[in-house]
Image (tube, rainbow, N blue to C red; front, side, top):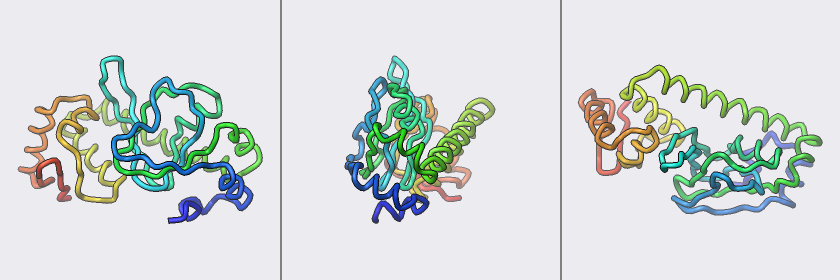
Length: 206
């Protein structure tokens, strides 16, 4: 798909500027797109695939923030790019992905001269903030079984598929839990006919 079809709101002048300066990059599943502490040289628009955005503590523990799919951008990278700050998040390709990298040097020009870009950035901030609020509410006010169900539905919504290709350990890492706990809760969900369990696959029934 032509990248312009994913961002139809961009005005012609903005499209021309991006085409002249942006670089398309490919990432294989598992590749690191952005590391904690890294200076941001570009902001990324996702064209294909799915990117996982998360925080990592000193012990290697992970806290899932959100996923990015086609037509979306990382709000954190935008903030860091505009303010010339280092990244405070990790970004990893969950599946083979195509990303359009826009150089940080263009940020001021894009924000000041192109209304469609300004509106896109604001909408991106708002969407990611609302998603983070859902995550915080989920952690603060739900039990682990409810968090797991929320996580699976959220993952399925983002991928637009009922099949979730994740191991129990991967889910446990995202939810800061243990594989044993996740496996036990998934088994209970299967007994309630909410999911069907396969090897490294989870099928949502509802």
